[in-house]
Image 1: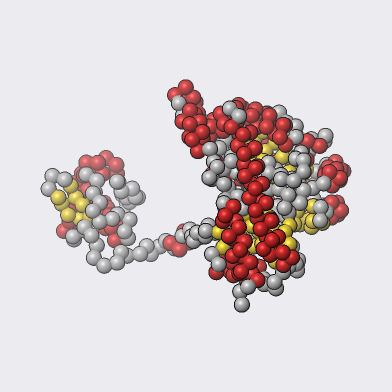
Image 2 (image 1 turned 30 degrees about the horizontal axis):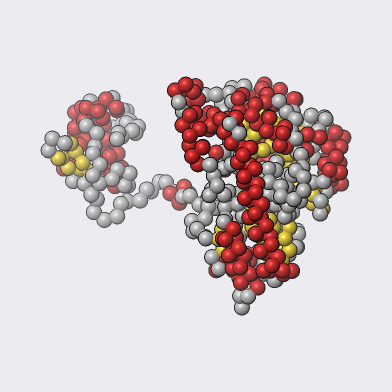
Length: 470
Ligand SMILES: Cc1ncc(COP(=O)(O)O)c(C=O)c1O
């Protein structure tokens, strides 16, 4: 270790005293722990560009005051400080403590949305392909890459999107980014609007709302009807951009019907606006035919399509993609030509190999069956155990459902009583912009990360918590 700080050559205080004072405080504040070896006089003298005599004088002072001790033929070591370490006076440490809303406590029955099934993750294949990406013959993966993401991976994504999601795009239109929020931020930066406003389904993914707010957009909440976004409301708003989740409304779960999709596209043409289509879990539909993405119906070239590998593969990858229409793509090239990619080239190479070798298609097919079975366990379990005391909402696709619970408990009470039975469930009120709704509370149950046994036992416990807890 070294000491790096500002030595004031103009000060009346000699340099050796400044150095002594700095090291003493580092020891007192606990930044340099007991037993730490101080740098040698020669090394510190080179590092700080001051004379060896100055260092030696500072060290002597520390030795004589008992902060450090000399060990023969080894060097100087920090002596344990008696009593409490003096806290930092100037820094408000509490401001930097981590208080993200990640749960400290773990629950056996945690219905968290965003968890995936790791029991069926192809660990050995992913490890093998990761190793392959790191081989010397792929040594350019160790360097910076294409600002849009690697062309070979974009080619695979374009093929997949066309065959599986009905998205019409060339690899050149795809931008790979570290998460949908990062890509939405990029989209916001591409928008050259005087009046920055965005219409957004109400309720909606809170992560998207946060991005638009932080970019200074005006949010127009658009209510839903039983089939999805209320297009009449959208027409009455003066927004030129709308953010929607047509394949699986978040969090309600309805699938936007064809007729409504056409209305939405008509709105886009009439207003010369944009539709942002967030297809975050379109891979998982359990009932009926797969519904192609809205982007595939767009002949005006104004739909911005977003997809992610977080649900179907793993969230830790932080790899999502955005398909830009022509005019926005040209703006992207003009504005962001000097931007570097946000996703590791090594992960991109691994993902490319995973897709090229057919593992991605196989994985999705396998996971669709697994999640379908979990979904059935959840919905049939709820129906059998709770019957008409609850109502399931949005049960045709995706990795979560909503539950309306009729027992006069508030959202907070439902969550608290579940916790007392070792079950973690999640509220939905944070997803609304307009807080005026006075509905029966709704609970979100994500089932991706739980086994079928855990799902069933979780329902049994929720039933006790909500309907037999007197
Ligand atoms: C609607 C919606 N979009 C996007 C995401 C996040 O996607 P990513 O992990 O690619 O940022 C989520 C996460 O839950 C979501 O609910």
